[in-house]
Amino acid sequence: MPDTAEQGGFGIGVPPDPWEPSVHAATATGKEKTTIRLGIRPVACWRLNNCRFQFGCSFVMPEARNEFGSLQSLRSQFEGAPLSVFGHADPVGDDAFNKDLSGRRALAIYGILTRDAARWERLYASPLGADSWKDSEIDTMLAAVGFPQASANRSDAIRAFQQADGTLTVDGACGPATRARLFLKYMDYLCPFVVPKSGFLGAGQDPDLKADVQGCSEFNPLLVFSQAETDAFNASADKTERDSENSVNRRVLVLLFEPGTYVPPSKWPCPRTTESTSGCLARMWSDASTRRNPQAVRRVFEDTLDTFGCRFYHRLNVDSPCECASGGKVWINIQLLDSNQMPIPNAPYKLTINGTVTDATADSKGMFTKFISPADSGGTLESSGRTYDLTFQPLPPVTELKGLQIRLNNFGYSCGAPNGAMTPETEAAIRAFQSLHGLPETGVSDSVTQNQVKQIYGS
Image (cartoon, rainbow, N blue to C red; front, side, top):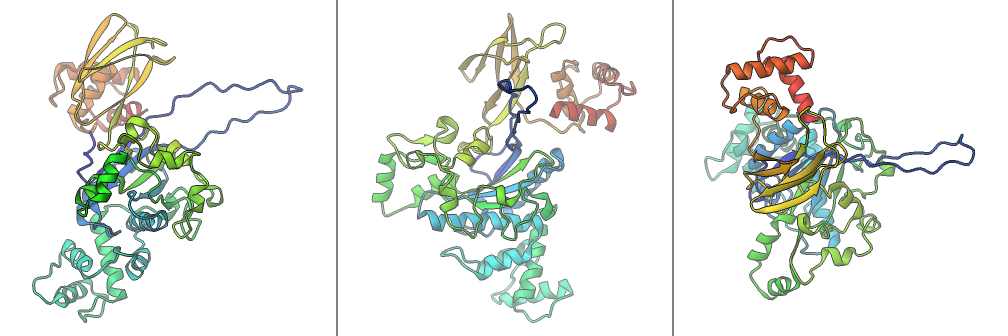
């Protein structure tokens, strides 16, 4: 399960789009061709929450190191998936300022992923209001990479860093050359991998990173206060509660797209971080002002699906587990099979989770998708006269025997209770799986078997 919104963020796969029938009329002569155009879609998403940034600033805090590890896992799972970075601000201030601020945060993440120290130098050298990297940010980076300030004299820590680097003049001043080395060292501390600029959606073809990085201003909030709440916050001199509640709207999202996807920057609808909001406004819903502004009741995107102003962003993320104000729901796919392990098309089912009952019908392949929250531990499923107990728990990697046992159980190869121990039942289940998939029937959880299980489970 992903972390909650109060923590730093998380990464997770996105539910696959169901294939819908494509209807085409007959052509005039029968020789003409019709075209099916498939839109791009994310296969996974990664979110970094507001608490991983210096307040009101684009500087990324050391604690974000935890979340970059989860992005590394996602990239391993979706190898070759190109990235695009989206920054978001809360609905305080004006659209133009928030577009700049959200863009700067997205650029800071891009800089880390690509080790673009020059990009960070531009952020450092060109403050935007309160977004000003000062001595405190230098101190934070030095401490993170092993050179904490041991005295009131900051230059001592800088001098120690310069001496250890071996390429810098040891003068105790954090000038451009020293900052460039410090930025890179800190980026290495935060992020254990590097993404080539060709690994982004626009392949780094645009000098201002169109299609690779964008700031979405305050146009796509996850949470919109009620009008009464907004009036109360506006009337109060203390904005602490308002800012705290709004924190869920201040976020950076990285979307991973189908491997092989490339969008020419000239075709990408989002404006560059250096451009005005006019490009964003051209992509808004006709009722965008109503969607993203207060109404009679508080609205949360995951419940109402009517808080995003940008229709393009809405289409990309309407099913995204990362765009949940409560902190990232996960999704499960369930396929209903008969006693011969064949799908039951359009099977009715009743799903009960935490007392909430869903009566619905599976699709033509006997499948349905359900979002669950990190607090959900299990439930029951009734279908075709049978009742099944469901247990939701974090899934260990397939390289751990318990992780393999859970997956094999879900496939229908009974391993008994997943306990991480090699039992005769587990060995028999592994042999049965290996036999069906043309692998050597060793009964051993070797790397070939693990990779086959992982590949099928992921699909």
